[in-house]
Structure formats: C-alpha cells, structure tokens
Length: 246
Length: 383
Image (tube, rainbow over all chains, first blue to last red; front, side):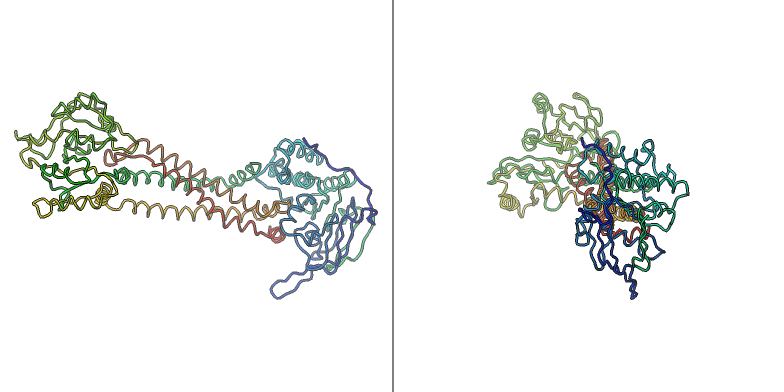
C-alpha cells in the first residue's frame, strides 16, 4: 500500500536557482468581450514564482487577480502569452490534458469552500484521489492523513452542514492537498470567515508552506492575510505594479 | 464502482423528487409488463399455431357447420397427412362468467393433431372408452378444483333429444402443455356423444384441422382443398392455423395496436418527467460540477457521472416496475377465464431491459452534455 504523505519543505529560491522558477508567466494578456465591449483584464503580466514560495496576489476588485489565478490553475487560457508550470506550457494543453494536469499538480481552495453538500468530509477529501489508481484502503489512508494535517481527523463522517465555516475551509484545504499537488492555489480563502477562523486558516496555510514545502499562491483583498505570505504582488488594472518581499 | 457513492449521493439530494420520478418510471414499466402479458394472451394462439396445420371452416362464416362426410375427402387430398374435426359447444358451467372453451372432437384424431397436449396413457385409454367422458387442461382443472372422476354438468344451447339442455360429462383425464404457451384451458369431449344426443345439425362438425406435409406447400394444398368443395352447399375456406388465429383475434379489435398506443403515450410522458428531473438536478449543482472539473475530473467522466444517475434512476424504477408486473401476472388471468394463457413473455423482459437502458440514456444525454460542456470559470462566477 502506498504511504500517505504530504511532501517535505525545500529551500525557497526566488530566482529559481538551478531548478528554475516553478511558475513562469510571460507577457500574459487576457481579453474578455461583453457584447461589443472589449475588456482587457490582464495586460502583459510577467511573473516568476519559485518552488516553495508563498505568494499573495493583492489588488482592488477587477484588477485581474482571480483571472490570473484561473490561468495558473489551467481553468482558463490566456489570450496571449505563455504560462509555464514545472516546465510545462499549460497554455498549449488541450482540455483533457489540462484536466489530467490539474488532477496531478493543482490543489484549489475557494472562498466559499465549495464542498459537495451530499458527501461527508471524508468523501469530499477523497474526490481528487478517485482520479488515481489508488485502492480504496490507500485512498482512505491518504484522506485520514490530509484530515489530520488540517486538524479535523475526528470530523471525517460529518457533512458540510454539520461543520463551521472554518472547519469547512479546512476540509477544502484537505481536499486540495490530499493528492500532494505541486501548487496550492487559494482564491480569497479567508474571505468568508470570522477573525478567529481566518487566523486558523492562515496558520494552516503557513504551516503547509513552511513545514511541508507547499508552493502557495493566494489571492486576497486582506492585507492582514497577505502579511502571512513570503511575497506580495500587487495587480492593478491588469498589470503587476509592485512586489513586496517580507 | 468507486464513483458509485458520488452518483448515489446526487440521487439522494432531493429525495422526494427522486422518489416521485422513480415511482413514475415504476408505473410506466409496471404497465409495460402487465399490458405486454395482456397482448401476449391475445396473440398466443397466433404464436403457437402449428406451421403444418390448416384450419378449414365454412366459407360464409365460422359459425356455420360443415358435413362430417368431408373428412374422408379431405384426407384423400395430396399433401394432407391427417385430419380431425372440432365443434364449438358453448356451454356454461354453474355461472355464465365461468367462461372456457369446450369442444366436441374425435378424440384419437384430435390428440394426434395436437401432440402438445400431454395426456397420460391410462387417462387417454379411459377417455377413449368412455362415450360421455371428457378431458381438460391443467389450468382449468386447477381453476375449478376438478379431479379425475368428477361429474361435470354443463348447460348448453344444444338441446338433447329428451328436451333438456343439461349435459353431463365424466372427467377422464387432465392434460398438461408441452410448453408454457400450450393452451391448457380447453375442455374436450366426444363428438359422437354430442351428435347422438342433439336434436339438430346431426352429422355436422364445426371445422376441420388438417395436418399437411411439406408445410411450404400450404398455398397449393389450400387451393386443392377449397376447390374440392367449390359450388357445393357448404363451400369451404381453408387457411393456415396462424391466419385463422389472426382473424379470430381481430374479432376483438387490434389489441396490439391499442396497447402500443397506450404505452407510447406513457413512455413519452415519462421521458419528459425524468428528463426534466435530470435537467433540474444538473442545473442545481453547476458549481459542484465546476468544482469537480477544477479538481481534475475530465469531461468524459462528468458526462458518464450524469448519465449514470439517469441510468440508475431508470434501472431502479424499471426493474421494480417489471418485477411488480411479474408478481401481478403470476397471480393469473385477471378476467377469470377470457385470457387463459396469462404470462410475461420472455421478449417482454428483454424489451423492457432495453427500454430501461434507452430511457436512462435518453433522459440523461442532454443534461450530461450540458454538464460536460460547462466552462469552469463561468460556472464558478455564476455560483
């Protein structure tokens, strides 16, 4: 039986070092059209993120944060430019390839948790593993590990409606990390939580980054949340404006 | 199999709605199974008709008799192997609602023509030796709790020479069917007893059953037979047993067409009901489907998951419906005698299984395609 693990930390290298950047975004544009109106959401974004980083993407509403995150997750395609992750040009992948790539390399955390209400916490966490060749007992072991990492080992049988908001988000994080992905992408992960739960989630993300070496990219409006990241990147009107190293 | 809990959990999401949809499918397949048995009961005579048997009746009407003297002339026609006669009796046992077929026959010839009637040798001997004896099918014996040796009184339209319409028979044998489709509801007795006792139509029989060889020569043999009695007082009309049964069944209307029409309407309505349920079910969880895609579920798998839900719904409802129909059919003829061979034909079960699958796929295809083509970013934004 495969051993359930969450990967160990690696040296963070902003410059990419010998391995190069994990995420490389080059001259990315994203244009939407609404009727006859053209909306330039991203306008020539360049960004490199090293493996093991914890990056916060900040900016006002409509600045293109979530669009950039969706591009990094392979949920959307750039109108122009290149998105390379772990040496793979995901902007050139087909639908099927992207789905497979996401299942292997991306863990996504949503603002509103987006757990499936008809499944228990365990079953929700197990979802990404259904796409693997793991046996039922192996999946169970991985799920138990992920739930233990987020501190909800005793809540596996609970349905989302039986959990608090903070607990739901922890389950969502467990679902995101259970497959040991290369990248953890979080879209306003504390946006719907009270202060206490927010702190717990940020502690958890920080621990995943520091203790387990997860590369995390987090979109947030919240300066307090962003302060937990190693780096903060500011987006405004579709362009990167500043970078802050903490 | 590992995706089954996911499919099942979605079906349990709106339990009342799922239950009502399930019930509507169940009722549709209950009707399908039950009406299939009704249609089969009407068609069974056609299905079991012997390919090498002809039936000769009076040219004008089936109710007009033919002379017994025709029998030897028929037997002499080239291609005819054997011939027997039968005469409709039309008696009533205790109550007019106790309807069943009674026929006066030449016992030996009749049993030769219908080898599918399995009668034990000792019972056959007893019957042949007993002028007022009769035999009946197993179904009939069970229905009226008759046993061998019972005296069975029938009131018939035939008047006896003593002025009475009461006829009494001794049950000498009970026959079984060689196949489940064999008619085991007949009551047959000696034509001689009828002919010697009645006051009119003496020397006449109802119709002839003729075995021919080879069967593919039937059209030519039919021509020869009818030509034999052309321009006589009793002209004949000969047809294959199958054609005879079709004509007999048509006397009560085209049951098959009526049942097909009813079932078509029922299935069309069920298609709309189940299809609407699936459409609603998918639209209610656009965000969840987008989450699955985000996690990495490929389009093909999303399609299969939604299709599986509609197929599971159709399979559960359909199998329960067919099962319930089978249980009801097992209770036997609901008319108390008009549909003696009342069973679910195997082709009904096979066709039912095909319809179940078809219904599941038909109701799930459009929502499944909608789910498959869902754009994650738009779905998450809408959610």
